[in-house]
Length: 168
Image (cartoon, rainbow, N blue to C red; front, side):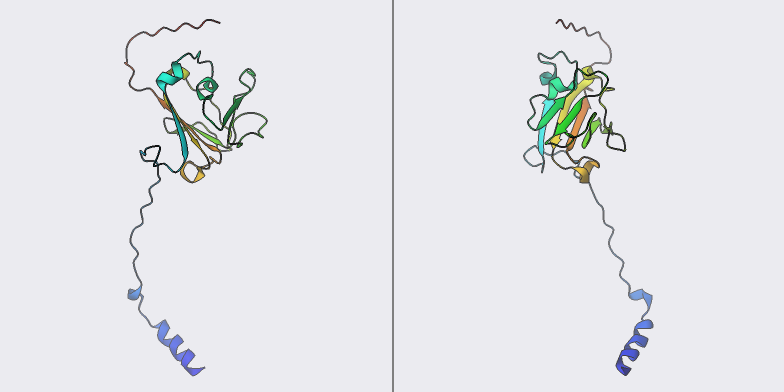
């Protein structure tokens, strides 16, 4: 018992200068340009040429219909927003978009409660759409089903006139 008290007494007099200073830790998110092969997620990318080809551009579901694992519903119910489900996430929502993060030029269109809306997106200004399928909450937050990242077309000229005609 005596050696324990002696060690306790000695330990209390150890100067604080012996404490170690740890190196600074820098954490970088993986939001860096990667090729599709290097990315740890299932990613599909749709370019502008594919978006406008034979599309009336009434809704985002026309452009995203060819992506596997992505289900879009309720396009013709104008009282409610489009329902998006990625690999089953968001399928049980009665309306709207749940469990899928929507980003437009890196700015979230998803509200804090997980409800997302795409009515405010100008479909004619879309340059590309990336759909990241699978859990990605660690990178984007509140994205258990996946992420739909819409990038604007910044390569278009500032001035000029563009006309479109849709019949039917």
